[in-house]
Image (cartoon, rainbow, N blue to C red; front, side):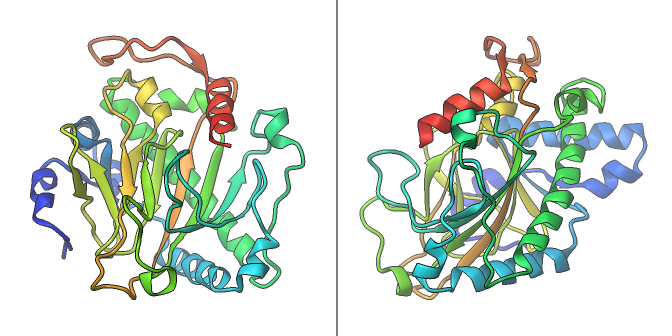
Length: 321
């Protein structure tokens, strides 16, 4: 059964594809074209879709979420010993998503893969920090990355067909791509206190990569999408579905046919002070030397100049520091 939080969801529900990847894997050419067309419609409308039949084991996701909760419930001074450094894994306390904004009501444990970030500045002193207090976390996070890399490769094959290209179109740009995982903990208001004016669990933003895949928990405060007319609406939720958002890389690649999904995570209402959520995220990218050129019209809409993904990534990661 699909859970919803507000009536606004009716505005988006009919346009959000619920992509069943089993139909893509097991169907013939016509079935694949149908799945790709559904994905195209959803990403053009909102830069967002839900996927089922994804093949990421529920027990693996449940274990990683449990281990993450164990870590986040450690004392603050213990977590501070695993503070994240540029380009590496580690813990981050509540921080603003952009300068001048209040801190987000979340904690993060990030973990990266693929070696270098491509930036000597960002890679300097890079370390992989994994908590001794939760010894299984590193292995579980590695398993999550492997499953999500395979899933993202498959999703980009569907994307390629939706754009009129061959299923393997993006493969040449993703031989050793940047990709990263993150554990996002949204503590209860009982723990944090009431949010300040405009304060969110995660403030409005778009992601840098190609696709972000999110394993969410249902809550009265949660993922919201910005509509073309500037309204915020609750993202649809289904218990075993994964949420997918378009990032800046894929938006640029498609010439804004699929806009980068501007989203936020809202706090719960005051009458749900105990709500505590934990999300598992995966962000896919491209090779550092991948030349990102938009699909031309009639597929693409915006004529971005070509850019090397590594250059774009370095510039934006540096700007966020």
